[in-house]
Image (cartoon, rainbow, N blue to C red; front, side):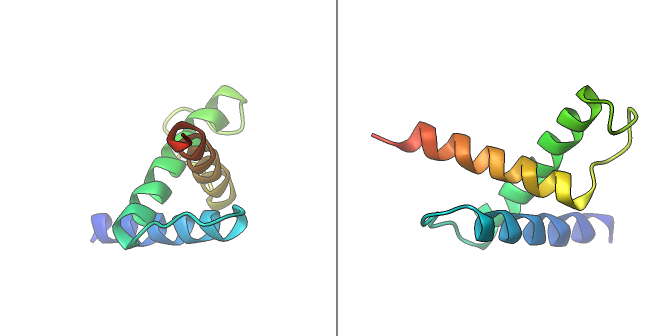
Length: 81
């Protein structure tokens, strides 16, 4: 059940991040979920570096969305020709 919760929250985080990022992303359900999960990981580590979260504490929803937006922004930069 835990893995299903992670996938559901990852999908929701990915959807919110895609909603707030301007432009067309062209991501499907699986890539949106992966974006959300990676965003949560980025949000956790950045939050730990800034002292917002203790070690081992997961990021909150808002930090996860910001992390996913950063990942989406970097992916756009790398994919531009």
